[in-house]
Amino acid sequence: MTPCDSLAEDPLECRQRTGGAAPAAASDARDRLCAMLAGVPLFSGLTDEEIVRFARGVREHTVSKGEMLFNRGDPCHGIYLLLDGQIKLAFTSPAGNEKVLEIVRPGQTFGEAVMFTDRPYFVMAQALSDARLLHIAKAVVVEEILKEPQFALKIIGNLSQRLHHVIADVETYSLRCGRDRIIGYLLGEDSMNGGPTQCGRAVIRLPSNKGTIASRLNLTQEHFSRVLHELIDGGLIEVQGRTIHILDIEKLRERLN
Image (cartoon, rainbow, N blue to C red; front, top):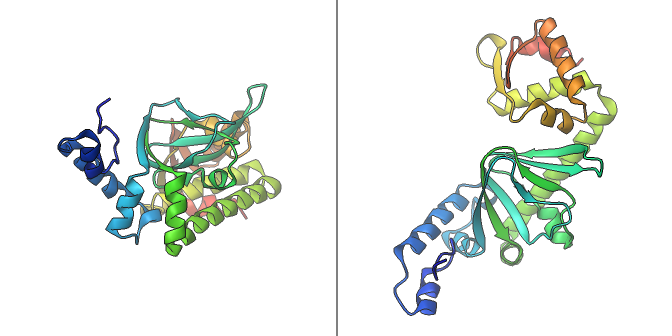
């Protein structure tokens, strides 16, 4: 480890600490980190000076597919922002059964609520693919909330949106059958990918394996596969591995009525 290997360390501070010229690599790394932060919706509207303040408390992490980012009960020292890849947030029972709560996608953050309550993580986070993340230290987040009300509102907005998703999940699990959950999920994936293509058709690439998605929908993998076969037999979809072809968006949507 070199004296100035911190991704976000201020080059002037590094020069003062080491008694020499700050390496150009340290400045380049900080500039790269600031550019990444500036491109994230959570930080949009912040000035360059505010972005630099954040960068001093941010570290970049890379994880490989299947690697654990943290376990239930680990302390939380900040929030994570996913840059690339996918992260699974889940519970695991003593018997080894797993319940997927969320599949985090690029641009999304997680860990805010736990950080503000000073409690340990109540879920585990595991990489569904190779992934890059930024970890933003709690001290930096709190400092910026106190200085910048607009940023505080964005954090509150993120937490409110997360709560809305939890309520929507409870409603779906309580009031909709397994088939409707799966159809709703497929239509939601289509919407996230820009909506239907030509002639009401669409192509969806499932973000993870069917078992993980089934758990996210509070279904068994067998139930999930059975519904997919019913939709195939009904001429509504075609399945090729993790790629699903929706043959007619409107007809699929009608099955929800």
